[in-house]
Length: 631
Image (cartoon, rainbow, N blue to C red; front, side, top):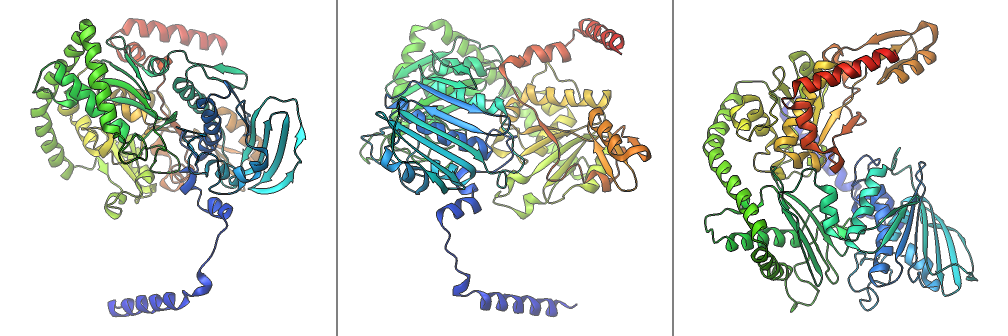
């Protein structure tokens, strides 16, 4: 076909599309249908519950937010939450309860609620009248009961369609609201609540609301020290000095440093965790660095040196906050209230820190001295790395032109605005055969491959200098574009893909050591994953099952019967590309690498990757003997 014929066909197709676009193509959707068709506009991504920001957790948060707002106004000190294995959720607060004549409207009429009236809810999170309605629309079952002054009303819905409504009747139940819902499986396919994410959500509410008791499936959560408790619970390493805890009207901050790389912040607005920060966090980071720099009278200090290793949290209360999306993960407000004459958030935060942080450091010279030592150490290392960084970048650029370590994906070139960044991933694998299998079976649009040459260096205990002097690490950080932080991260998912044998496990540990040592924020933000690949293939002439465990293998053998053919995959390179594409598609099995305080990361790495060879050897021998005895 000639180019002229192709152009003519395209013109004819466009003309037909224009002709087909008439009045009958314009559709009107009811609000419930709009939410169900476009849930991302209301709850962000849908997901299946394997990530903390998946939609089912947003539904739970939307319900609890209303209960938190009641507590913030002085009503109800207990919130009871139940989450079942089957995905059944209930939330009971002891606030004022929804006005009985407006129960239906508050959960099923869009843009309806009590929070437009700031005399009733002064500094709440839910202001748009959307939250409960979105939960109702996206649930296969939704039940609400409101109790007020000896009376109650109950209504049941399915996908926001009312299926039963009671009259207002007498009750001896205490005031408050009870919400029960089941997320719709047709929207959240094969979802499952991970309790670690639910617990983190409730912990955050406690830290922001001192004295509030949240009870999850019978377990009580409460905080006495607010954000100081949060930092104590979240820091994986010991702080270099006792966290600085500052409280004021409508603001609370906690600041410390750890002997680590990067910066770690937790930010909140009106009790809402703003995982993407916003104007308040930007103001906090700038003001904190400026106050510390001025305190030490060091004009040459760079803000990056002051903040490297910093762990901090900020919570502010804003009247009628404006968020950048319904999920409320990033604050967009520039002032403390809608009043254009009110103080800006930047000045409010800056003035508070200039006064309180400066006074604290004058009162506590020993803490100030430890902080100064950390900043100076950061400065020395930065200057040492400056020359290396320039040379390493040039070397990485030259080497990349002549090697096949990185097989990039097309999304970076076809999507210059980065609107599809969430779809991108990179597999880090070892050896030509494994890399070859993944490369041939991957989706070249969104999946990249980085091939390691043998086992990478054990970098535990080394400084960041090794990231530039070691060719493997230099090329990897260049491929990920994380040298200066995560803002430039080129892939949403960094997937370690190694063989399921001893060598593969060792490579996995070496890579995790690299990330935890120098780029812990990559792990904290949930970007690092382990690829699960099948250990066995069990099949007969009609059935083929891939098995990831001995239990799955036994079940597959029973299913296939006496004619079962069993194959043991010893490495990724032994899986043909035609088969491999089944394991790295949309439903690939990934284990998220997570950081928790109880992991004691530094101690763990020191034990497994440090120089205590004899201690590790003794541990292996003792555990090997136990396994042999059990066998």
